[in-house]
Length: 237
Image (cartoon, rainbow, N blue to C red):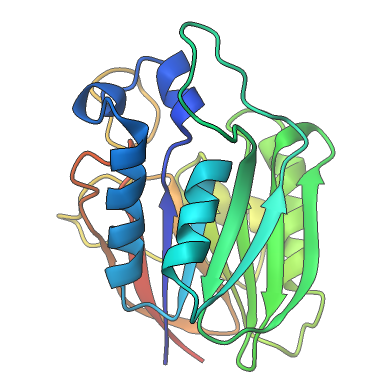
């Protein structure tokens, strides 16, 4: 059994640009970063994928987790403040995998049609792990095809994909194709991306497997630290 989690932790500049409530609840970003790091450090999962990690948060994670391996993909797009100056010292944005088993990075690339989204893959002793953040428009199909190819780079090895897919589980399953299973959350699960307006799905963060089963998938409350809630699951390999 391998335990996994995925969490979009919300880059501060994105929050400031889009008027997210997080900036009101946490007006001091250093304090929010301390709280985010504490939450990640307490998590028991062996593999944790994080999206929208700022340079400031990445540095804090490295300081707080010296006993874990942190793999990263840095996007060429650097979030730019549009409304107010940001207090971040390092605005760059990363896709991150925090793992107990150091593993070996085998893929790290932005999607060719979006310099702020991409995929990061690591081979561990048990499986191929792919962290991702997918664009929420018609570019999604091409990106899901890329992800399927990355996950199947070694078709004999089970794979798990973790991330913010910006689509519901049916769309993700159709886009990835045969053999991939998107974990189904309990009927009473918290939304992974709560919304008060609009028609977009509130369940867009997923644990996906190929050649492995999913048990005990659930959503935890972010308690106001991000606009997304963490998703966790146990993988039977």
